[in-house]
Length: 419
Image (cartoon, rainbow, N blue to C red; front, side):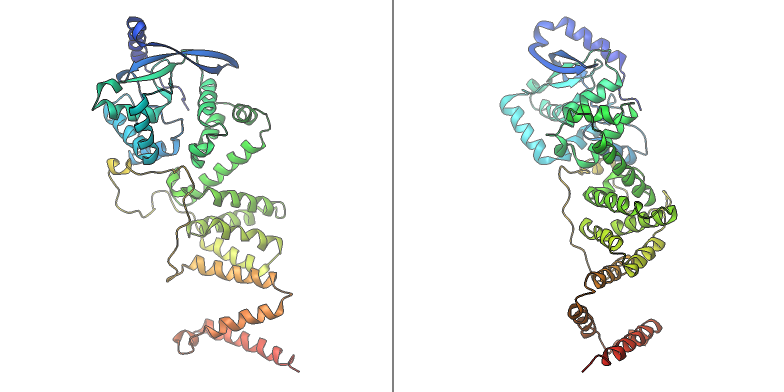
């Protein structure tokens, strides 16, 4: 992965502008950065917007960028081209309308007081949202046609660039604003840039314990496996608001793997979890699988196995989708919100086959949990029987007939217990 975009022509033009207008564009401000482990102070310039380009493919908006590329037929967007730059700008402005409005008002009232950072070639690695807002404002007032930005030396390498971006955008105070999916993608990008998990941990948190980084990278692998299983690889919008599901999935799988070495059974459990996530089960519901394993609820686990058997991988090009939106329509939507999405209330009028099996698994789990509370078990059985519609034709089916026979056998046993 090439983390450093190159534009030698703009590099020369930018240098020529700075040399000719040093008195006008050089500010007294300096931005401290760490490069190759040493602190450096970068000069800050007022640079016309025409010399600056977006760079969102490696930053806070990585998931959104990948989605935009997918909608663009898989073709990378070139921020040096006017049409592509416009798509990127529209995406940035619409990702968080409240933040865009707040920053726009702030720049109008106080000007741009927080400098961005650009590469030597003019690609903005910190301040892309500010750049998109300034471009918007400059259409109405030419005073906004410049951006205050620090310039990195031409010798910066991909490791330094990742550390710099991560230090700016992914520190502990910024992780929530970064977005849960983009945080994970940024960590993967660090590994792709040949940084070790301990280097990444040291950059982000100031200590070399890499356990949290490794844990998060493994979580991203689960997310990517889930997307591939559902035939939508790298379509991260499909897991918007579901990162908590994968945290619970990780805990469940770790718990199960410590008890079960059979790879076929391990894969089956993952398939069942993917099916439950796809079917809309909440992360709190899915957490109950751990109880099923811990309490060795055989009947509950049998239902989980049936869910796994029901769940099959979907070929990438066979996913049925709604009519494709135009690229312009797509970039006006938010993909990865600042906070996890709220659980959506579902329509229970027509439960899916997976949901029906899941309900059966939960009921089997509750039987095990309440095995010493006989009044509760009997009360639950009675409540279910009270809910029967004795006029329903379903009662005549073979399945219901077999179940009724089993219930009657239990009733005969219970009669022997009456005094």
